Length: 363
Image 1 (cartoon, rainbow, N blue to C red):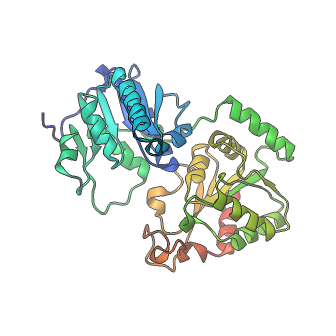
Image 2: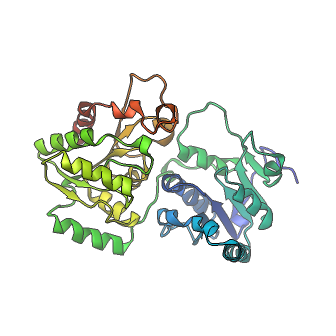
Image 3: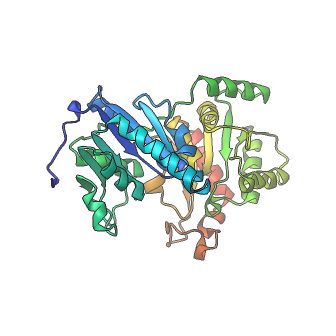
């Protein structure tokens, strides 16, 4: 059956829905309002999520989500038989849930395959121009993508609901991330061990898994020195990634200021609990920045090649530090010339970051 733009869905009569987002941590977190809005329109609807295993902490404990199912990236390395077994178990589980609505929020081909395999009555996905005809035939509702519109990714995700006749309310669009009691309790102990009181420290996460989004160690160290001169305590964090931990080591070598270093020691839930207790978060465009926004901690975000209109801190007091001397940004490239180093970011002056901090703290 062909559906057109005016074909709304009465979700109140549906039993189960599946929302698919097979991308990175930040991408998954900014889908969280989709679950809130959908659940508010159909309180009896059981809404599941399908994400990569490493990103499930972004959504589990979300009050609107019934179950979080995962795809493991390492299945492809486990051998043909083991991979087929894992894939079959996942498909069997998803089929057993009897979804009547599938919402796919990215370009991943698995979403189209599942829309066909699960037999859902309704299936929604973006209308990517370069996708083959089979993609378009896999979904009952395709979401138009204006070619040059710059809108926040949260709103783009919510377009999937608008397409089926659901208009999100203003108070429904906040990011949702629940740390959980265990993470809250453990972080309280970690902070107490460092003499850090809630609301009395700055959370600084200078790195990213993507090198082209990282601020140089010497500038990060200079910012810490400037904060220390203002009497601020700094809590440093980083993912348990060799490159991020090396960046922290280089920063520590360049500053004599006392910092509480939690680098590589926190789960994503603990990172959220720590951010929630900070007076301010400073970082680059990365998942921790979105986590801080979800916890309603004011954010100073350093932006380079990525666009702040699409990926900036969502619905939280914030300041953007970005270059006005590089008309090429936001280019979205993997560093200038693909060289992993983004001059529009690496040349951001420390003074601009400290001014943003001062402005946000003084509001």
